[in-house]
Amino acid sequence: MLQTVRERTRFAPSPTGYMHVGNLRTALYAYLAAKAGETPGTFILRVEDTDQERFVEGAMDVIYATLRETGLVWDEGPDVGGPVGPYVQSERREIYKQYAEQLIAQGDAYYCFCDKERLDEMKTLQRASGIAPRYDRHCLSLTPEEIAAKLAAGIPHIVRQRIPDHGTVTFHDEIREDITVECCTLDDQVLIKADEMPTYNFANVVDDHLMGVTTVIRGTEYLSSAPKYNLLYQAFGWEIPRYLHCPPVMKDATQKLSKRNGDASYQDLIAKGYLKDAILNYIALLGWSPRGGEEILSLSEMARVFSIYDVSKSPAVFDPIKLNFVNAEYLRRMTPAQFYETALPWIKQAVKGDHFNLRLLAEALHPRCEVLSDIPGQLDFLDVLPDYDLALFVSKKMKTDFAVALNSLQEIQPILENVMEFTAPVIHEALFSLIETLGCKNGIVLWPLRVALSGKQFTPGGGIELAAILGKTESMRRLGMAIERLSAC
RNA sequence: GGCCCGUUGGUCAAGCGGUUAAGACUCCGCCCUCUCACGGCGGCUUCGGGGGUUCGAUUCCCCCACGGGUCACCA
Image (cartoon, rainbow, N blue to C red; front, side, top):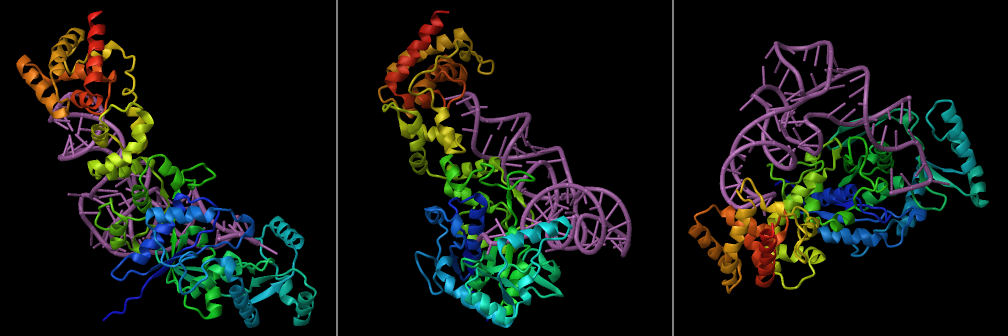
């Protein structure tokens, strides 16, 4: 029997206070990769807060809330704990220090006492002479005595990774195959900063190994650092995890989606009336195409069919039009009751009157709404009848003009007056028998009614539905007004 | 600029040497219809360029172009 390895993946945000769409997608893929297949694995949340200067108060709450809302539940993390904690990097300082010392002892890392000024000067010089800026290994030649003396004197220092002088490094990305680079193009990067915090470059390697992460899923911005991480794994003699570098989510062909561009974050999309499941579903499709073709998938359905090998290599442009479509699909698949609940806050934004049939209104809105924010604009005729142009009564297609409209409305008036139970089915029955009596097309009667009740060219629902939504009193009042106006001309 | 990655319709994409180059969104047309929608049916539009390899390239190799990433004591 085949031994199945239980996946362990992680989402490792740094708490900067903003969950953008690309980040969420990375979290989603990591979650899906863990949960895909027959034996669900573990999804870990780890906080990468090693940059004290960038720490934003409350940023973690945004991350927690977003993941919870979208259902990306983590099995191990800062708040829930787990066997390989702590899950906050600032609480793991001692661990990194210990491993850095091991590297120094092995000769795979070294202390560096260079100050910022020297480093800056060096870089400027290198740039000026057209060579790639790289640490010149000034401190690599320090003798053990010199190092001990500087350390004892309390001179600020950092620890650098010692990149091999010659040769190449190869690493494997699951969707890009092997990538090989020359060691001489790599910099002796900083592992431990002067404040004794590790850099991301060091902490991610140590943590991914210690936390047993099997597949590392992150953005392409780390692709060019990956060789240096492999060198670290090799120096420790650790098994290298699988890598998946996700292509960026773009705003257009050349720009990434970003906060700087003022592009929508997850929170912004929610505020704009998108459903969380629809957002998640849509962003999953940016760079991943499910086998089988069905694109509308719940989180658990996605988990069933997800494979990191189906993630694409090239960037994907975020298309708000398609997001609208996906959102509309989710809306339409709701039961009338669910839609009513969801739409109610948006309906109440635009409707103050309390005598309307809101359930019926929601039903009329249901197929006419892609995003919840579409709702208010469709309801601007309810509280007050717009001061409409009588020309609306004229429709070539419906074969109505002023005279026809006036006549129809006059026929309708007594009939509706006699409808006791003012509901759509009853009104429908009454008006259709009128139509039959008159022997005319539906539109002759119904078009003028709709215009009289709404004063609008387009409305959610036809005349009958509008009458039921408005109620008898208001309907009769609007009908009377229309007759009065039409009679005057 | 060096290094690395990418390039199938307007957008997301399937494809993994031989296909009429899937599908979805958008757009257009028709049907349904009391408006607008919904729904149904149909249609337009694609392999960045140039060389190879091969009987045969969207698929493999090379070069070019374009786009992106990265060159921090940020992640």
